[in-house]
Each structure stands twice: as C-alpha cells, then as structure tokens.
Amino acid sequence: MVPGLERYWKINSGLAPAKFQIAKRIEAEIGDSLIDSHRDLKKEFVKMWKNEDVSILEERVAEYSFLNLKVDLLKEMLKDCQFCERKCRVNRYEKVGFCKCGNKSFYSSEFLHFGEEPELVPSHTIFFNRCTFSCVFCQNFDIVYSDEKIADPKELGMLIDIRYRQGSRNVNFVGGNPDQHAHTALETLLYVNSNLPVVWNSNMYHSLELADIIEDVVDVWLGDFKYGNNECGRKYSKARDYFEIVSRNFLRAREHGELLIRHLVMPNHLECCTERIVKWVSKNLGRDVRFNLMFQYWPAFKAREHEEISRRLNSREMKKALEIASIYLDNLV
Ligand code: SF4
Image: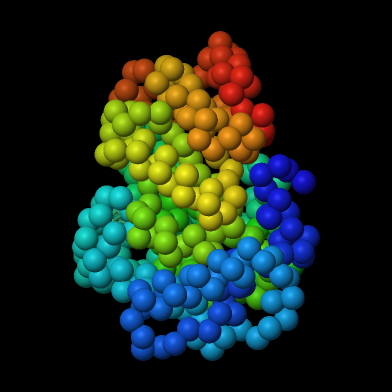
C-alpha cells in the first residue's frame, strides 16, 4: 500500500466504497432548489464517506440521487460557465468559451493505460478533448485538438464496467483536461456499476464552484503542478494567478480526497518552478505526499518559439531536480 493513498487501496480491495457509489445511494428530491439541496445533502455525504462502510454497496441506488442532482447542477452551470478560473461566463448551449467546448463532450480514446504511476496501472484512461489551458509545450496536442468521438455517458459508463472486468484499477478522467467536461464525466458515473476509484487527472485550475460539486466523486486528485510562480503560468499557459489558484485547489483537494501530484520538470525552470513547488508542497501538504517528478519534457507543439524551453532536459538538470525533491519530499514515485 502506498502511503497517502490508503483509501484508494481500500476501494481497490473492496474494503471501502468509491465516492460516486455513495453519492448514487443518497436520495435527493426533484424540484427543490438545486444549490440548497446540494448543500444539505453534502453534509450527509461527508458523514457516509468518512464512515467507510462498504455495506452501503448492498443498498439500492436511488431513483434520483445526490449524483443526479450534481449532474443537473453542472448542466445548469453550463448556461453561465464558471467551471474553471477563466470564468468565461458563456452559455455553453449556444457559445464556446476559452476552452472551445460547448455542452457536448468529445474524447479521442479510452484504453487500459500501463504507463501511469505504478499504483494506478492498469488505469482506464478516458482522454477528453480540449483544455482550459493553452500550453505552448502541450505534450498531448493531438488529443486536445481532436473532436473524434462524442462522449455518450451511457456508452462510456458501460465501457468503464467492461474495462473493470478486464482488470482496470480505476477510471482516470484525463485529456486535455477533464474539468470542462465535468457534467459528462459525472453523468457517465450514473451508469457505472463497479466499485472503482475515480481519478481526476487535472491541471487544477478549476473554480471553487466546480470543486464544490466534483470533490464528492473524485477519490484521487492526480493534479499537475506546473509552475512555481504566476509569470511562467501566464507566459506558457495563458493562465492568470496560476500559483494562487492551483495551490488553493491542492489544499482543498487534500481535505476531500487523496493526492498524487505530478510535476513536469522543464529546462531552465529549476529555480523558478521545480524548487518553489517542491518547497511549497513539503511545507503545506506534507513531506509524505505522493509526488511524481517527471523528466519526459520535450519541446512539443509551439515550445520552439521559446528558446529557453526548446530542448529536452540535460543530465545536470535531472540530477539537480532529483536532489531538490529528495531533500524536501519522502514519497517520490
Ligand atoms: S470551462 Fe473554463 S475555459 Fe471553458 S468555458 Fe468554462 S470557464 Fe471558460
């Protein structure tokens, strides 16, 4: 069992219920104010989540549940989108915002992924398209800009059960980024029967409004921590207030689930990004947080337009990054 992911391990072992399976068993009233009902039911949910009573899986699924209510809330939010901190406030039934997503979701592929962190594999990755960032070095640009398959919640839900029977240890909503497709991801979970952990593989730039809804289904936050300051976030991802927003979201995520943090080390960004992130994580989330220091950066997409990041890492940088991380953190992947 990996320290920091004890609950994940329990769900994997059939000793605890996944959050979404609890949410599906909490009865909600149709017709009440969605926000008020959500606030009230959240208290009930948190008690049941902390209780870790796996026998809840034997109870019947509610006809209209806390999870249905969340889906309806998200669909309502689409009319004035604030899913992420860009807060475009567009009606996504009629227009698109920065992420270029309307109300329908698309994905490029889904499969059992064996290249994720050891505790996650095989991981059932579902690659949604588009992103709330616009990273010049996007390593997944082929996925992000693909509108290949429409993400039908019922079909995807059935696929998640099939992949589970094939050996998946979790369902991993990724992209691009999953946040702008939260309504589809949560609706998909309505159709899933298996008790498996939900992994949210995100850039952690979501709004507090979105966090309030999705945190009751996310078991593991697989979050990217890209930059140690706002300037790099603005320059490479067109994201304002990067550091404040992402650090705030990591702190909140820790209260509502388990964390696995990824940091992609970038050339010439050891002091301004890697070192600052590692120190902040150690001080604020603890030395024992699960942390993946990633060295696979390559100058993808438009990275060559920026000379300082237009190459791979050299061995000196990799060694230095590992040294820094080893001083401050105890639970490196
Ligand atoms: S998800 Fe974010 S980027 Fe996309 S429309 Fe909503 S607020 Fe804008």
